[in-house]
Length: 116
Image 1 (cartoon, helix red, strand yellow):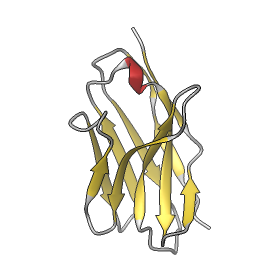
Image 2 (tube, helix red, strand yellow; image 1 turned 90 degrees about the vertical axis):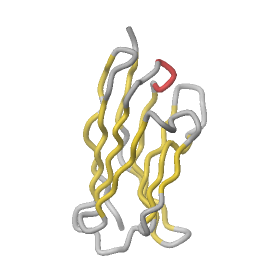
Image 3 (cartoon, one colour; image 1 turned 30 degrees about the horizontal axis):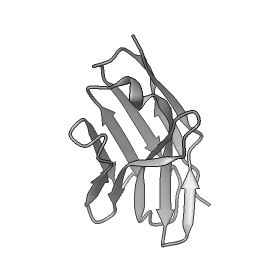
Image 4 (cartoon, helix red, strand yellow; image 1 turned 45 degrees about the vertical axis):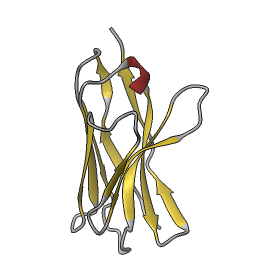
């Protein structure tokens, strides 16, 4: 079992920045993927950014160039720096971790609201 603990999020005006952090304290498993998904009201959960244990990263087209994912394998932590935020970035953001190809784990969710 992998327990993910999120922190960060909140409310910001358009153009502002927020940072999300996630940790998997005490995990004995190698986390092959750590990343972030988001779900806006009435929409499906979608991938925002992912970082593989080997160092490669992947971003949704809608956030590429504005968001940066960073991961520390030794500490099982992942962060998402979100800059130039837009109202359409408003959603609940979920930390995600995957062990192997089948075992997926989720954080509790963090609200991000971008509004003037």
